[in-house]
Image (cartoon, rainbow, N blue to C red; front, side, top):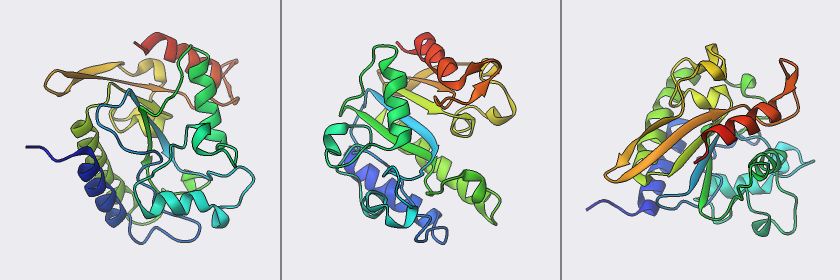
Length: 223
C-alpha cells in the first residue's frame, strides 16, 4: 500500500531541507512547497526559486516565508482568500493573471513549488556557490519522485531554469525548441501533461513581452 500524499510530502519536505542544509539563513530560507499538498492536483505550477511572499517587505521580515519553511503549508500562495490581510506576491499575481487570460482560474486543487527551494531575490546570487549544482541535482531527484507519487494532471514549468527539471538543457534552448508538451502516466491510469512557459512578466522578448508569449503557450498546451 502506498503512503498518503501528506506522508509523501513530509518525507520530500524533510529530504529537501536536509539536502539544502547550510544554504538557509535569515535571508535564504529553504521552502519546499508554497501550497498545501494534495493527491492528483489539477495543476502544479513550478517556478524557479522563492523570492519574497509579502510585496514591499524585505526578506528578513517575510513571515510567510518563515511559515512555509517551518512546515507543510496550510495556506495556498496563489489564493487571495488565504491571504486576506495582505497582498499576494508579485509572482503569484503574474501567474494568476496569465491563467485568467486563457479563462483558467486557480483553485485549492492546485499546487505550487519551485525547482530551487532556496529563497533569494535573484537565483544568480546563489547558483554559483560551492555545492549548489550537487545539491540541485539531489533536490531534482526528490522533487520528481514526489510529483510522480501524486500524479498531477498538469505540471507547468515557469522559466527555463524550472524547465530543466523535465527538459534537459532547456536553459540553452528557446522555448520553441523544447519538445513539448510531454505526456505520460505517472501512475497507472493517471496521465500527466508537462510543458514550460516564459515567466509572464513584462520584460521584452523579440518585440513582444514574456507575458504575451507565456499566454500564447498556455493557450496552446492547456487541455
